[in-house]
Image (cartoon, rainbow, N blue to C red; front, side, top):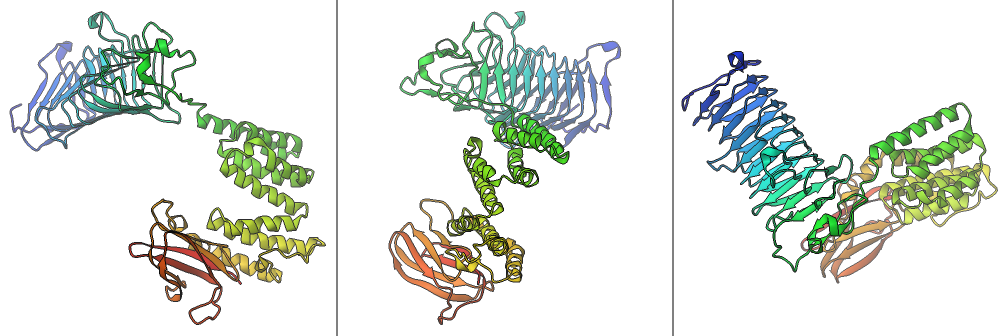
Length: 567
């Protein structure tokens, strides 16, 4: 087809020769703004060459039909290349042109499965590339991303030549072997970085992981001017130790600088002096351990949890307890572990009511004391055990500590509710009903007062806690502000930090945005400062219960936080 001509192709069109004869194929000369789209098109014995025209292939099949694309964007999605390869070359530079190949199978090509030259943007994503002369070859590409591909049983895995590329995600680069057509010294590499290539080899910390293994020669071969800038979270190994896992084939000119390849996994039989070449230039410690896939652990733990719930339903409480504790012992990193810990408290109430033993378990069992989230949950559950066996003063003290030193404002709000409930239970079920803790306002005068207070807190929780985490940036050079206790009655201490000295305004506003009181209007030095607000307005009158905002302003910054006054 001539330059500036048009080509329109319908869906499900087949291009083929009679009797499987070969032909020159389909040739399109572009130089126009037309975009050609092929949907579910079949090419048989029909090479395709398209020049200077943007092309999109969706769901197409290529059989003994190589694709050559010159210039302009190229998109290939859900296609199948059999005994066919694809080449794209950009000789008219355009930084916006994207060559994107995804969800495609490329096999049995006598050329490279995918060969890209000169493109500024390349994405090769989620493809199955196998049994080709070579897997992926990038030449002179300034921005390549190779992610989540299966690249196996080719003559080579990935060749990078004077290109910039990121090999990321969970590529599986395996069993690439050279044949007689490659010659004695070509082929059989997992990754080959050459001639001033800039690249990163970054896998992912969770399964599926990135693996480069059991390629015929080196798993990673590189020139000294083509060392990966970053390389971590990869599993690299070979059962055949005839060649190093990783080899730099020429003299390293940066002898004063070690090459960092730490946080990778090199298999259990890794011997650095044998598997790295030259071994002295590499820093390989610490090594990374991928571990068992988290989803596998979640599934196993969930199965145990279902068995425990079934046993509890059938009143086989001993078996249920054993299975719940097995989850906590063997699967502490799973989400199910949290559910198992909570179910133990419910189970003991039906089972033997031995809350003292369960409290000891929550506060001492090793896997519940190794993670901050589990520690926080276990301590709360242990405190509920105190309430169950009647040690209300200790339980109330726990809630008061949370209010005075809250991990978060929601924690403080819930502690107010739970402390009120503990007082309520103590009044009905204990001879210690006269006990009052340090925060006297937590003790409600009646059941009705408790219910009103609880309902108010629950109904206003979203208002009180919205944007809480954004209120105080945790930066060393930023102003910071908080108050304790929160909620409070009758007063609270506002603490703030200044990274530099200057004039400071500290003001309190009500929910309507009206200024209630100016607390500070003066020069303050660098460092931490405290101010106690006694819940009075500018005229010295006590304000009513509710949500209040306090704002700290300096000459260049301002920060707002929330507090709750309860009476």
